[in-house]
Amino acid sequence: MFDSHDFFKKRFSAHLKETSRYLRYIFNGHIAVAMLFFISAMAYYYQQWLADLPESFPTALIMGLALGLLVSYSPVRTLLKEPDLVFLIAAENKMNAYFRNALVYSFVLQLYLILLVVAAFGPLYFATYPDREGSVYLLTLAIVLIFKIWNLIANWWMLKIREPGVRWLDQIVRMLINIAIFFFMVNGEMLLAGITTILFVLVFLYDYSVSRKQAGIIWDLLIEKDQNRMQVFYRIANMFADVPHLKNRIKKRQWLVSIVSRMPLVKERTFDYLYRITFVRTGDYLGMYIRLIVVGGLFIYYIPNSWMKIAFAILFLYLSSFQMMTLYHHHRTIMWLDLYPVDITLRQRAVIKWLFQLTLIQTILFGILFLAMNEVMGVLVVVVGGMVFNYLFIHGYVKRKLV
Image (cartoon, rainbow, N blue to C red; front, side, top):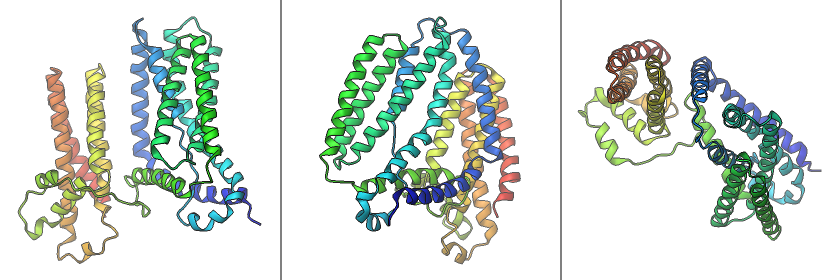
């Protein structure tokens, strides 16, 4: 007798075992130190900023947008795999307990993000509305959780519809209504919040009626969406450990390849060429590198203290070096590299040199940003200190890890 509840427990146990193994690598000592530094610095400047909060600051609009988007994004994690398309489709009428457990797991999985966002907005909320009691904010949290459940159920119903345009339209309509509801609620306009809630309930009931008319479960869509989310997790984990399940995406980017691959075509530069085009075309290396530069630049620009700007510049140089060092193991499963008539030391040297060049570009960009802010001392400290840090970290720590 097939028991879908027991089957979900086995599937969940295997999923938890797999993800926890990679999470141990992601949240290692290096990332823990960086996260502690981020949180401490942001909390300090957040409190300073709240002390001088202008009266015209649009708290209701910002919280409405954030909470509305937060409850609207409610993906359903089904933990389905490709073989299920063949072996479970015959037991579709017995899968109610499985999908009910999947909805509960999806809600619990997204609960931590809700608590983090609500906790982060708490000081801003009470600084803007000092006359409101804490119970009012707790009521807001409860309503956020209720709408999260409603949106999660609505998303599940819409996954029974194959047309992506219909699903996107429903998602956009619910998102706009969610934003309006929380904007009115935070702003204290409860009548308008109630009216928009009625609109949401109407859309919610419409989703239910549409889903009831569908023939059954669209297994291939559920499997595709779950696999896409797992690939996102694998790409993140691949920055810290080897992930054999990762499906790498290749992009041409011919104009960028033509720029980074300009070098003499000699045997000694074989791995220089390989790792440069790998960085440009494969995985998320280029995207991660650009994001770290942009986010680091935003921190440097908006943080008022000059020494904290410099500290964040060095921190993001460290993060770039640490994240990009996985480039060395990217081709670990390709045996042709071991057959190249090229010394292994040239392979390590190519990665070391490319990492130093990347962090040097990042250092110069941060220096230009300091120059644009008329902080001459910051330019000197970041450029000189950044180059020294890059050299010591890459030729010290990174070099020892490339084995």
